[in-house]
Length: 369
Image 1 (cartoon, rainbow, N blue to C red):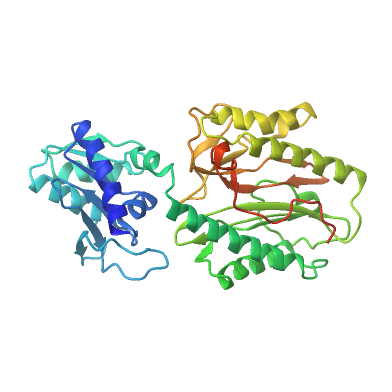
Image 2: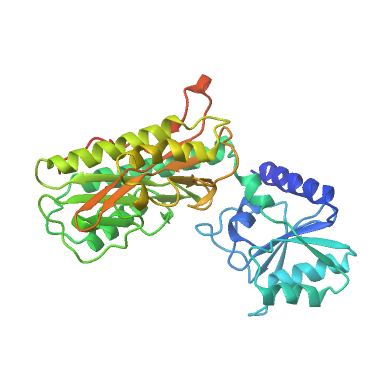
């Protein structure tokens, strides 16, 4: 993997050089991990000046669960003083190396931290790196996709085991905690995001925070969870009926959301406009009269973060590339009654390779549990 991280930093270095920047300071943790193989707490990465890249940490970089496996080709500078700022130390090094310009992630820096960088190296001109690393992260290599595939398998296992247990009478909060425990039991580093469990009138809500409401006969039960495996995060969402045959309105609503989700999945091809994928799913629900209640987007990218570019939204710019993992997650919530969400993680693949690769494979049939 050292060659992979070195190649990633090399691409960034070339981009900085083309923009007239001698070095780049990476402070966003997910970007540090992408370029360095790990992201110890409070660490920053200085790419350049020159050929050597340096990771600055406060205290020794230990552990692997949160920090990954650091590239052993990196120089590591340990700041022993508690309260020291690794970004300031990195800017000081760039200035002492007589670099004239330093590209920084302005979207991640606070105003106070930006001013501290200016003060420590007054002759160093700061410029905005923008989302250069995030853009570089969009297309995943096959090793990254393999990590996402394992994360999806873990999430499928945890959800499948929950569906085999007794659900009536248990609280949303209890079910969410059990799912997160099962994720770890099956090899996840932890949940990819706070697990959402909604029952009855809470079902179908996006990112519903589990409450003490108990599962009842006839409820819709919607679950959204994801696993974090070696830093890579997937997402799956399913909706079920509890303890009885579904009512007519439940079948009708489920079939509608399923049709929308299928339309979104089928639109995932290299070259497709992000807004067109959103439109494919959204138009199905809009035509049935649910347009006003729909979420701002019907999907998003996943990787080292659970919500990264590209965004599948009506105003989204850009087109999809092959090997970009995204979610497709339309849903409808009817106030006071509940609703349906269906959410998959997929990888964009060309039609010649079979079209989009579905990573989360738990059945989307409307089951009565």
